[in-house]
Image 1 (cartoon, rainbow, N blue to C red):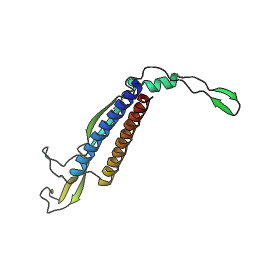
Image 2: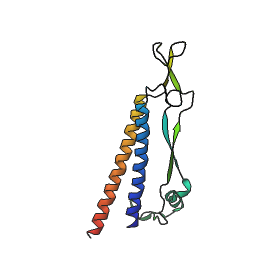
Image 3: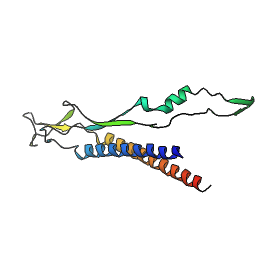
Image 4: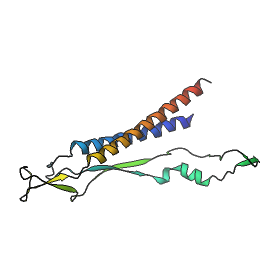
Length: 164
C-alpha cells in the first residue's frame, strides 16, 4: 500500500516541477519585447535548471545491485523476474532553480525611432525565441499530463485493491 502513496507523491512533485517550468516559460514569452526592466537593461531570459540528488535515488542502486537471474524451464521459455527489494523512500528528489541569462545575451534590432535606441539606432532586445519557448511549454505540459495520468492510475489501483 505504501508504494501507491509514494508513487502519487513522486508524480505530485513532478507536476509541481512542470508547473514551475511552465510559469518560467510564460514569463519569458510575456517579456519577449521588454527592453527596459527595473535593473535598467533588457529583460533576460530565464530557464529552470533541475538537478537530481543521485544519493537519494535508491531505485538505481537497487537495480544495479540486483543480480537475480531468469529461470529457464525450456530453451524457448523464460520464467521468473528479477526481484527488487529495498527501501523505496525518496525515489525521486529533485532540486530546481531559476537561471538568468548572462548580460551579453540579447539581440540588437535596428529601430532608430525607439526610445531605448542607442546612438547607432539599435535597441537591445531580449534573446527570446518564441518558438523555442512554445516547444518548452508544450514539453512541460505533456510531462505534467503524464504525471497526472500516473496519479490517476495509482488511484485506480488503490481503489481496485480496496474492492478485493
